[in-house]
Amino acid sequence: MKKWLLSGCLLTLMACGQVPQKQIDSLKQTIADYEENGAGAEMPEEFRALQESFAEVEKSVEAEKEKMFSSYSAVEQKLAQIEKQLDGMAFTIGARSDRFQKMYNKFAREGSLGLLMYASLPKDKARSLPKEIKDDLQRAVQPMPLLRELMKAETYAQKQEILGPQVEKLEKLNEMMRPWLSEQKYDEILKKVEAQMKKTNLSDDSHSGYGLF
Image (cartoon, rainbow, N blue to C red; front, side):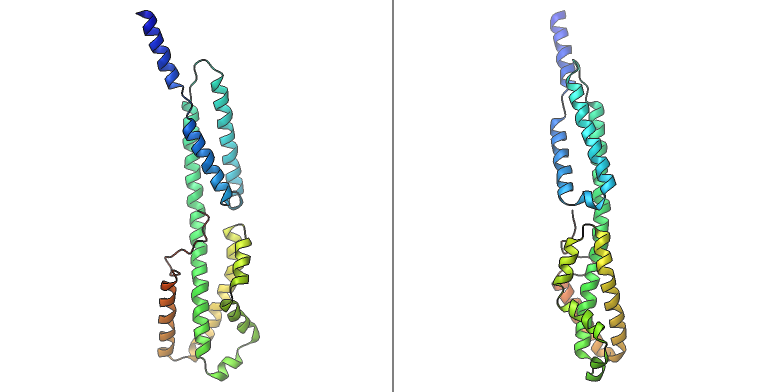
């Protein structure tokens, strides 16, 4: 009776000492996915610290395996903490992505608005625009060089540094041209732009896929 009771206690202890391997493997893959999607570039210090924490967890697991009666409760707590940090990182990067997306949508809107306004200007007004302003409009018509530059940028802060000045130029241009058009014409143009933005999923609440996550 005592022998069977002892065996039962040992089995219980062994069961309590199971390695949370499934959780470890899942978290390891998640960290790898984050790295592949640019989290290391976007938040280098935070991501490096997280990787170091996970490496320490793996060492702790190996150390526990050497013991007769292993306990992985501390490991599980650390894994849960790392998961929480990953969630926080995803939230931060997602917020940065949203801010950039809104700026990109604004670039698309102001560019479309500017082109239609320019096409509707009296000829003398159109000819009076400086060449650099016409060049800004040309970039809005053919945005691929700008898009390639944005794709090369590693962080959302870098993307915004590239795109921000372009948005400001277009806004100033549109402010300059608006008084040269009648209110009716401007309203017609504005409605066309808004309809096009919705059609191409570039309204204020939309996302066109620039996010890392």
